[in-house]
Image 1 (cartoon, rainbow, N blue to C red):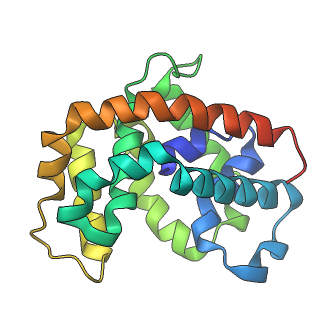
Image 2: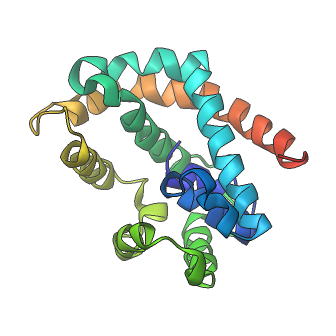
Amino acid sequence: MNFLAHAYLSFGDPEILVGNMIADMVKGKQIEQYPEGIQRGIHIHRQIDTFTDRHPIPLDTMTIFKESAGRYAGPFLDVSYDHFLALDDSSEPGEGWEAFAQKCYAQIEQRVKHLPSKFCSMYMYMKKEDWLYNYRHRWLIERSFERLKNRANYLDDDAPVFADFEKHYKDIQESYKLFFPQLKAYVEDISGEDI
C-alpha cells in the first residue's frame, strides 16, 4: 500500500503514523533509534506490506501492470489503491479527507526530529502537492507513476503504465473494493496485539 493507506491505517495515532510513513527508509537496526510508538508504526507498515504482497487479490490485479511495469507492478498497484481509497466514501474519516490530510501533515511535522533526511526531502513534495488529499485526482496518479518510472532502474521512461491504469480502471477499482476491507480488518486485529 502507499502513503494514504498507511496514514489511514494508523487509526489516528501520531507515532504509529510517523512510523508507518518512514518505514521504507528505516533499515535493520536503525529501528532501535526510534521511540517505541514509532517502532510500532514501522512494524505495522511492514506487516501491511507483507499481507498485501501475499494476498491473492492484489497478486492477481498486479498482472494488469506486468507487461508495462514488469517487476515494478506492485508499487504501481499500491498508488492505484490509494486513488480508490481517496474516493472511498465508506472509509472517509469523520472529519473528511481534506482535514484528515492536514491533520496527518501536522502530526508528522510535530515529530520532525524523528524523520530521516530522505523522508524530509520527499515530504516537501508530499505536502506542497497535498498527496494525501489529491490522490483522488488522476493528475496526481499520473505524476506519481512518472516519478516511479524515473526511480525504477529497469523501466523505460515511455512504459505505458498510466495507460494500463486508465484502460483497467474499473478492474483495479473492483480489486480495491474486495481487498481493502480485508486489509483494514487485518490491521485492526494486529493493532490490538503486541507486534
